[in-house]
Image (cartoon, rainbow, N blue to C red):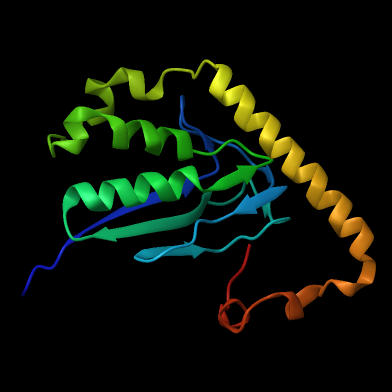
Length: 172
């Protein structure tokens, strides 16, 4: 086996990442990152309902890099470009893990979360968060206005999906 590079997978769950409890509800806004050496395996789309009766995993996000550091940075950028609104999800948790020096250095065990309790501490919103929330609200409002003015000209149903998306047999 020839080893070529490093890959990291983050499982995106509809959950409160301070207590790891499911967060069912509708996915009101959903945007996945795009770019080279990224793969998103998702069974949901914007408007899907995350049920409390099933596993709350909504996607697997995979990033590859020539080195571990490159894979971590690619994953960090991908997570920062991910938008999930309407439910709680664990994207912030993954970002905190990727920023943790022990993880970046490759020093982790199955007790990692227990040994790093700050990873699951409740997040206090700061000024940067407020700006990001305001930008997301403005983008959502602009999109709503654009959708309303487009009327019936936008494709709906299966025609709105790419050939790859239509070939997927299971959707949430």
